[in-house]
Length: 202
DNA sequence: AGGATGATCGTCT
DNA sequence: GACGATCATCCTC
Image (cartoon, rainbow, N blue to C red; front, side):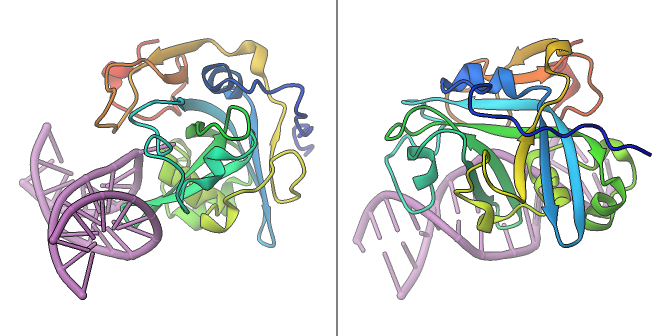
Protein backbone atom coordinates (compact mmCIF):
# COMPACT_ATOMS: atom_id res chain seq x y z
CA UNK A 1 0.00 0.00 0.00
CA UNK A 2 1.52 3.29 -1.05
CA UNK A 3 1.39 6.21 1.30
CA UNK A 4 -0.15 9.42 -0.03
CA UNK A 5 2.57 11.84 -1.10
CA UNK A 6 3.59 14.02 1.82
CA UNK A 7 5.65 16.75 0.21
CA UNK A 8 6.72 19.40 2.67
CA UNK A 9 5.24 22.84 2.11
CA UNK A 10 7.69 25.68 1.61
CA UNK A 11 7.37 29.25 2.80
CA UNK A 12 6.27 30.44 -0.66
CA UNK A 13 2.96 28.60 -0.22
CA UNK A 14 1.79 30.12 3.05
CA UNK A 15 0.58 33.71 3.43
CA UNK A 16 1.79 35.78 6.36
CA UNK A 17 -1.51 37.62 6.83
CA UNK A 18 -3.63 35.81 9.39
CA UNK A 19 -6.98 35.41 7.64
CA UNK A 20 -5.34 34.39 4.36
CA UNK A 21 -3.28 31.86 6.28
CA UNK A 22 -6.34 30.43 8.01
CA UNK A 23 -7.98 29.94 4.61
CA UNK A 24 -4.87 28.55 2.93
CA UNK A 25 -4.20 26.00 5.66
CA UNK A 26 -7.50 24.29 4.83
CA UNK A 27 -6.57 21.19 2.83
CA UNK A 28 -2.95 21.19 3.94
CA UNK A 29 -1.74 18.11 5.78
CA UNK A 30 -0.27 18.23 9.28
CA UNK A 31 2.40 15.55 9.75
CA UNK A 32 3.81 14.29 13.03
CA UNK A 33 6.62 11.77 13.46
CA UNK A 34 7.71 10.28 16.78
CA UNK A 35 9.45 7.04 17.74
CA UNK A 36 5.97 5.52 17.82
CA UNK A 37 5.51 6.20 14.12
CA UNK A 38 4.04 8.67 11.65
CA UNK A 39 0.56 10.16 11.80
CA UNK A 40 -0.99 12.78 9.53
CA UNK A 41 -4.29 14.53 8.98
CA UNK A 42 -5.77 16.95 6.48
CA UNK A 43 -6.73 20.31 7.99
CA UNK A 44 -10.48 20.90 7.67
CA UNK A 45 -11.09 23.63 10.27
CA UNK A 46 -9.10 26.67 11.47
CA UNK A 47 -9.63 29.92 13.34
CA UNK A 48 -7.86 33.25 12.82
CA UNK A 49 -6.69 35.25 15.85
CA UNK A 50 -5.72 38.68 14.58
CA UNK A 51 -3.46 41.50 15.74
CA UNK A 52 -5.43 43.77 18.11
CA UNK A 53 -8.05 41.04 18.50
CA UNK A 54 -9.45 40.88 22.07
CA UNK A 55 -9.84 37.10 21.70
CA UNK A 56 -6.19 36.60 20.73
CA UNK A 57 -3.71 35.48 23.38
CA UNK A 58 -1.38 38.23 22.21
CA UNK A 59 -3.89 40.99 22.91
CA UNK A 60 -2.53 41.89 26.35
CA UNK A 61 1.09 41.85 25.24
CA UNK A 62 3.94 39.40 25.19
CA UNK A 63 4.34 36.86 28.00
CA UNK A 64 6.25 33.64 28.49
CA UNK A 65 3.33 31.60 27.25
CA UNK A 66 2.52 33.53 24.08
CA UNK A 67 6.02 34.60 23.00
CA UNK A 68 5.86 32.41 19.89
CA UNK A 69 2.92 34.44 18.58
CA UNK A 70 5.20 37.49 18.49
CA UNK A 71 7.99 35.69 16.67
CA UNK A 72 8.33 34.90 12.95
CA UNK A 73 5.35 33.45 11.08
CA UNK A 74 4.70 29.77 10.48
CA UNK A 75 5.96 28.35 13.75
CA UNK A 76 4.06 26.07 16.11
CA UNK A 77 2.39 27.87 19.01
CA UNK A 78 1.18 25.29 21.53
CA UNK A 79 -0.46 26.01 24.86
CA UNK A 80 -2.37 24.06 27.48
CA UNK A 81 -6.01 24.82 28.22
CA UNK A 82 -8.21 23.79 31.16
CA UNK A 83 -5.30 21.79 32.53
CA UNK A 84 -6.30 18.91 30.34
CA UNK A 85 -5.83 19.73 26.65
CA UNK A 86 -3.31 21.29 24.32
CA UNK A 87 -4.09 23.54 21.36
CA UNK A 88 -1.91 23.78 18.24
CA UNK A 89 -1.59 27.02 16.30
CA UNK A 90 0.50 28.36 13.43
CA UNK A 91 1.98 31.79 14.15
CA UNK A 92 1.26 34.53 11.63
CA UNK A 93 2.20 38.12 10.74
CA UNK A 94 5.71 39.54 10.72
CA UNK A 95 8.20 39.25 13.58
CA UNK A 96 7.01 41.52 16.38
CA UNK A 97 3.27 41.21 15.65
CA UNK A 98 1.27 38.81 17.81
CA UNK A 99 -1.24 36.69 15.88
CA UNK A 100 -1.89 33.12 14.82
CA UNK A 101 -4.19 30.46 13.44
CA UNK A 102 -5.71 27.74 15.62
CA UNK A 103 -6.04 24.31 14.00
CA UNK A 104 -9.41 22.98 15.17
CA UNK A 105 -9.90 19.70 13.28
CA UNK A 106 -8.20 17.21 10.98
CA UNK A 107 -9.41 14.51 8.67
CA UNK A 108 -7.19 11.56 9.66
CA UNK A 109 -5.25 10.20 6.68
CA UNK A 110 -2.22 8.31 8.02
CA UNK A 111 -1.40 6.35 11.17
CA UNK A 112 -4.97 5.83 12.29
CA UNK A 113 -4.10 2.88 14.51
CA UNK A 114 -1.54 4.93 16.42
CA UNK A 115 -4.06 7.76 16.76
CA UNK A 116 -6.60 5.32 18.19
CA UNK A 117 -4.11 4.05 20.75
CA UNK A 118 -3.41 7.59 21.92
CA UNK A 119 -7.02 8.70 21.98
CA UNK A 120 -8.96 5.59 22.99
CA UNK A 121 -11.65 6.94 20.67
CA UNK A 122 -14.12 4.67 18.98
CA UNK A 123 -14.80 6.12 15.52
CA UNK A 124 -12.41 7.60 12.98
CA UNK A 125 -14.61 10.66 12.87
CA UNK A 126 -13.77 11.66 16.44
CA UNK A 127 -10.01 11.01 16.35
CA UNK A 128 -9.03 14.59 15.46
CA UNK A 129 -12.33 16.48 15.72
CA UNK A 130 -11.48 19.32 18.11
CA UNK A 131 -8.26 21.19 18.93
CA UNK A 132 -7.49 19.19 22.07
CA UNK A 133 -8.29 15.87 20.48
CA UNK A 134 -6.03 16.39 17.49
CA UNK A 135 -3.14 17.34 19.75
CA UNK A 136 -3.64 14.13 21.70
CA UNK A 137 -3.85 12.05 18.50
CA UNK A 138 -0.64 13.64 17.19
CA UNK A 139 1.23 13.70 20.52
CA UNK A 140 1.58 17.47 20.36
CA UNK A 141 2.31 19.20 23.65
CA UNK A 142 4.00 22.27 25.03
CA UNK A 143 7.42 20.88 24.08
CA UNK A 144 6.41 21.51 20.44
CA UNK A 145 6.03 25.24 21.06
CA UNK A 146 8.27 27.33 18.82
CA UNK A 147 8.97 24.62 16.23
CA UNK A 148 9.74 25.98 12.74
CA UNK A 149 7.33 24.01 10.57
CA UNK A 150 9.48 24.46 7.44
CA UNK A 151 12.53 22.67 8.82
CA UNK A 152 11.60 20.49 11.79
CA UNK A 153 11.85 16.74 11.10
CA UNK A 154 9.06 15.67 13.46
CA UNK A 155 6.32 18.27 12.93
CA UNK A 156 5.60 19.83 9.55
CA UNK A 157 3.06 20.70 6.89
CA UNK A 158 2.57 18.86 3.63
CA UNK A 159 0.71 19.60 0.45
CA UNK A 160 -2.76 18.17 0.30
CA UNK A 161 -5.76 18.75 -1.94
CA UNK A 162 -5.98 22.45 -1.26
CA UNK A 163 -7.46 23.43 -4.59
CA UNK A 164 -10.51 21.28 -4.03
CA UNK A 165 -11.50 22.83 -0.71
CA UNK A 166 -14.80 24.69 -0.53
CA UNK A 167 -14.32 27.05 2.41
CA UNK A 168 -17.05 28.41 4.67
CA UNK A 169 -16.86 30.83 7.59
CA UNK A 170 -18.64 31.18 10.92
CA UNK A 171 -18.07 32.83 14.29
CA UNK A 172 -15.29 31.27 16.35
CA UNK A 173 -16.11 28.56 18.85
CA UNK A 174 -15.65 28.84 22.60
CA UNK A 175 -14.44 32.44 22.69
CA UNK A 176 -15.94 35.03 25.03
CA UNK A 177 -14.73 38.16 23.23
CA UNK A 178 -15.29 39.40 19.69
CA UNK A 179 -17.82 36.60 19.39
CA UNK A 180 -19.55 38.03 16.35
CA UNK A 181 -16.56 38.04 14.01
CA UNK A 182 -16.60 35.31 11.38
CA UNK A 183 -13.01 34.14 11.74
CA UNK A 184 -13.60 30.39 11.79
CA UNK A 185 -12.85 28.64 8.49
CA UNK A 186 -13.97 25.13 7.66
CA UNK A 187 -14.42 22.84 4.71
CA UNK A 188 -18.05 22.79 3.60
CA UNK A 189 -19.64 19.40 3.99
CA UNK A 190 -16.77 17.75 5.86
CA UNK A 191 -17.91 15.31 8.56
CA UNK A 192 -14.63 15.92 10.39
CA UNK A 193 -15.24 19.53 11.47
CA UNK A 194 -16.12 20.30 15.10
CA UNK A 195 -18.76 22.56 16.55
CA UNK A 196 -22.55 22.53 16.72
CA UNK A 197 -24.41 21.62 13.55
CA UNK A 198 -25.98 25.06 13.17
CA UNK A 199 -22.50 26.54 12.63
CA UNK A 200 -21.70 24.03 9.89
CA UNK A 201 -24.06 24.59 6.96
CA UNK A 202 -22.97 22.72 3.83
C1' DA B 1 0.50 34.02 48.16
C1' DG B 2 -4.04 33.51 46.49
C1' DG B 3 -7.85 33.84 43.26
C1' DA B 4 -10.04 33.93 38.69
C1' DT B 5 -9.93 32.44 34.05
C1' DG B 6 -9.96 29.54 30.06
C1' DA B 7 -9.36 29.20 21.70
C1' DT B 8 -11.74 21.83 25.86
C1' DC B 9 -13.24 17.14 26.66
C1' DG B 10 -15.73 13.28 28.39
C1' DT B 11 -19.63 11.90 30.80
C1' DC B 12 -24.21 12.11 32.22
C1' DT B 13 -29.24 13.10 31.74
C1' DG C 1 -27.75 20.61 26.86
C1' DA C 2 -25.25 20.81 31.28
C1' DC C 3 -21.45 20.10 34.29
C1' DG C 4 -17.07 18.97 36.49
C1' DA C 5 -12.15 17.99 35.87
C1' DT C 6 -7.77 20.19 36.38
C1' DC C 7 -3.74 23.32 36.12
C1' DA C 8 -0.75 26.76 33.67
C1' DT C 9 -0.99 31.40 33.43
C1' DC C 10 -1.88 35.98 34.66
C1' DC C 11 -3.54 39.54 37.71
C1' DT C 12 -4.14 41.60 42.24
C1' DC C 13 -2.83 42.15 46.90
